[in-house]
Length: 203
Image (cartoon, rainbow, N blue to C red; front, top):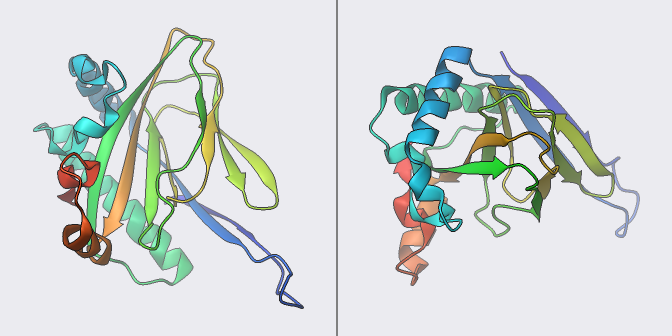
């Protein structure tokens, strides 16, 4: 069973008082699954040349460990929603590999900030002395150690960044979860023939 962490504002007393709520879920994958995912990531190294993260979906790879990972993500998602007493959704997913090399860092960014933003996740496939840092509204950065097999679910709109790597390499698998409503909106309104969501598959 994973761990839920939450940051919320106090009930506002006036219109201008701050309002925020951030919920995150932390889970741990088995070493055998993590090792298998890392092996698949390294087999597909040519996909990552020139930062081509938008042009493929790891969940389309035909390997058993990706199927097992999908089931693990679904279970973590169900546990997360149960903890929050919120309704689960029919989901689509798209994933990519971030092959961080020595000296590289990942600047502050978010995955989606629109009316259909939902959840994103990241999984550390290697053991490194780095942190992924999440920018909680009004409160600032929190640091989460990047432990091998650690999986985090967080709102897609939440900004985050990764420290500069001092080791030779760090591999992580990132993904976005999209609801059926979000996909329906996308199919009705998309005009970009290269949009990464075209690669999403049902989870």
